Image (tube, rainbow, N blue to C red; front, side, top):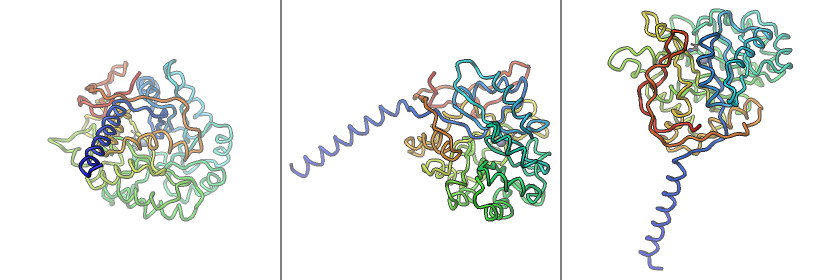
Length: 370
Ligand code: DOR
Ligand code: ZN
């Protein structure tokens, strides 16, 4: 074969391969994903939002920041029962419960709740860090006996990683938390399983990357992969892009995109979908939280495609989380198809409130089938 003929044949092979990839990529089928960080709330709001998560995910870690918070086994079982009544019959979805850690949490109660299969994890909110965190931990020293037991029984600690010191700039609270709390904590309890929740900074990504994948993981939200802090102020203040931890500079968003799409088992999907009624967001002092459940998987797929990493979506969404939690991968699959659709401007909760979903009014290029 002449050099030119060889070149042409290679080109043709490359072309065929490219066509095949494109055709395959009009649909993506992956093991059913899980959402390792959701807020379901309670009562009418819960009934309005549970179906959106149950439509996309096989399991979800349900955050316990109700008022009053879900601090013991009986409260978690009762809450789980209420959630179960809100799951549509056709859905293939299991809620996994987290206990809300307080200064008073009894380690033996947690041990018992974990043994009974009620608790999959424990959530640490520094007191005052975010929505409904007033009952959270005031000093990490107060919960060391609890953390010792969790380390012993392998119960994961899920951390909202922001300091609450009012002197620390809101954009620095996560990075300062690593130095002041997280590094010393993981040094002291080297076998404690820790999830650094909704990481938003390059510092957090670097901290997690340096850890041992079997005991340190991180969730990354869809919205932190899409927005940076400038977006919150684009043309005016945009309350529906306000969440905690707040979105950071572009360089941090880039670091998150790189981590999420790397295939590294330390990073997994956690939306932090956090519904608040429209009037509580569009207020003089608006609540923190982005309601992303109705668009979550589609947004992640869009980001992975933009990063030329659709082949890593399944690891991030469906494999890495179960591996960290020591759970089986879901047996069923979901399929995303390439289809343009417009995200609704607003969603009616059925009880007089409206929810504004993430990406409201925007067009997405992937749609979950079925
Ligand atoms: O933005 C947030 N909203 N961050 C949190 O940590 C809590 C959540 C909520 O519950 O609304
Ligand atoms: Zn959250």
